[in-house]
Structures are given as structure tokens and as C-alpha cells.
Length: 231
Image (cartoon, rainbow, N blue to C red; front, side):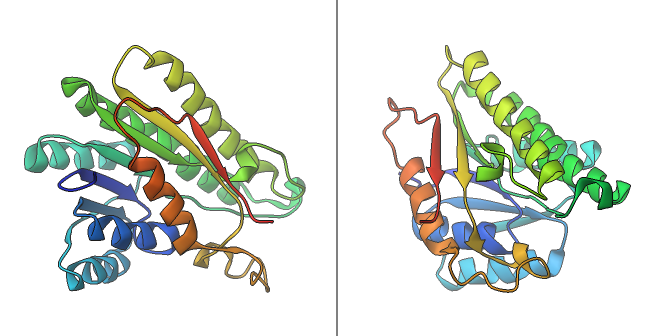
């Protein structure tokens, strides 16, 4: 059901974003890979093209509103629509609240919350032209329950959860779907320098498969949220 779907994936250069890109390409999707680092995006694009998939690259910092506007202006000009937006980009700094720097706080709020808001706003403008589309917000289980030494990270993710639930109400009379995906710990570069042992964490491949299953639902079925957590 993803064949020829135009999918924008933020944070596509590594981790879950990279894995989803390859998996969705196998299903025939047309991918627009978004991230700040060109080298990482090019490596993801190569993986996609090596399996004869389609990938376009767009470098953008989603914390900058003008860059997000530029991204979706490009999408509209080149593809005329966006079928699916995956808000996957995210950052985290952990520790006691009083030990977090202003830079760390700003980075989490700007990327995790404001970046998601910016991308969602611009994608919705395109989706509403055809009254169709799907937005998937990768939120983290930190957006469902508070965790010690994750206060600001959790606050940013609770914000995305609130955005998701509010838009579900706002869009309930439309054919545009929005889903919150609450993901527990995964084996990705996100944890480098934070956790020494992540061997018990879930694989990004398995999480990507669960998200693919979500995207493969029939048009008349709407899943408001899924929780993917480790035992």
C-alpha cells in the first residue's frame, strides 16, 4: 500500500529514520529524506538506491521555521503532495534538571517539539488540499510517563503527545490521519555517550516493521496511537 506514496522522513540520516527509509523503499515508496547532515543522508539514500528504491535528499534544520517552509515548498513543487509525514527527528540530554544547560534545554524543545510543530503545520497545508494524508509522530514512551533525569526530554515529548491528540480532534471530520507512536528504548546512535549497555533495547528493525504495519492499514481504519515497548 506504500507504492508510489510520497513520504517525508525527518531524522532520516541515522537510527530508526534510516531503517524506516530502507524498509519503506522496499515497498515502493518515494522518499524525501530530511536531516541536517548531508553525509548521513547520502549514506541512507545509497542504501535505498542499492535496492533500486527511490530517495530524494533535502538538508534542513527543522528547528528553523524558514528552512521547514523551504522544505515543503520544494515538496509541493517537485511532488505536488505529501502522502505521509514521519516526524522522527529527536534529540535528548539527560541528567538532573538543575544540571542541564540552557543550550541543552533549547535544543530539546526546539527539535522535539517546535520542529515537529513546524513540519506538521506545513505538511497539513498540503494534505488539506486533497483531504488526505497521514502524519506519524515518533514520540517515545517518555511522552506517556515521566522518567527520572529525563525531565525536559519528557516535557518535550509530552508536548508532542498533546499536539497529536489535539490535532486528532481537529481533524476528525477529515480524511487526514495522525498517529502517536510511543517507542521505548531502541538500539540506535541516540544513546551514544548516554548509556553504556543497550543490549536489552529493542532493534530499530523491529520497531520499523511495527510502524510499517501501521501505515499499511486500510484507508477506513484509523489508529490513534501505538505503544512499542521492551519487556
